[in-house]
Length: 375
Picture 1 (tube, rainbow, N blue to C red):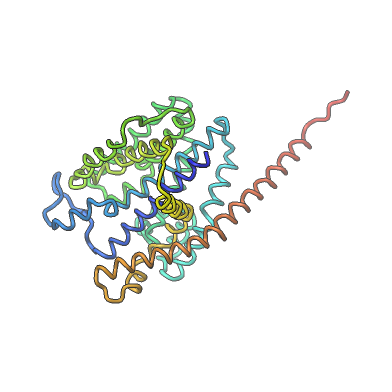
Picture 2 (picture 1 turned 90 degrees about the vertical axis):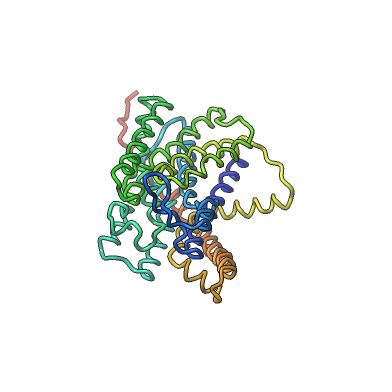
């Protein structure tokens, strides 16, 4: 299992590199992103260069968030399955809070002071991780924080998924969640809802992405493979999916299409023994380390990314901006490594210790309350 965990860290590293690269492109090629469509195809306002940039992996790096969500669903549900399909909700949410909140709170305080906020409600909603429910707060303080609120809301939905799983079975429960998400996405597209409203406010529209990770975990725990074909078909699938970027279909359903792609890709990675040369093995270890620090990189990189890229590339030319991006990443990586070691790991340990103390205390109370039986 250790080798497979390393593979997941590698995928996390890829996910954060995609997200960081995407945000960097927004700085280097401001306004490059395709946002407007006609009745079906994109509007004619975009140049060929913009279109090609949008078709690159980094140009669609926002999909790295979907990869994170799938990995989250996979690991959490796999833990549930390993525990004999039993869940202690206090323990579950205790672990989630201590894993996510301390580093998040540090970043929130830092950016609330340096970037600012929109008032008490904005700050309070971020503290409670429900800021995606308020239009003016979705991207305030730190635009990246929206997905952390989504993640926490998905944790709250997990017991509901377990009920569906128990009542309907694996396949039907996933289908039921898919119907909910696809219906919301289709309604949003048909009625012209604001995309940030559909993706960021309506947690149910993203529910299927997380549940697909749980589905993969269940198949994996049973020793079943989802993907047994030749890996060349991953390239073929990309050639089919890429043109959708130029259509309104991508705008509405890209999250689901690419989530399915990622699920099969993860399944293939988990069941494949890779033999690589020493150089690529070293690169893999670096990406693994980036994956370990990916949460802190995600937390801290965005608000001042533009300022640091320009700071490290004073001439402002595109080539210098790319150098500035690389130097900025190294700086954020170093900061995130410290946060990972000092904050993330330390507070995970503290959370585990507090849970042990509370659980031991509860067991002692239960023993004390048990009636003494006479012989």
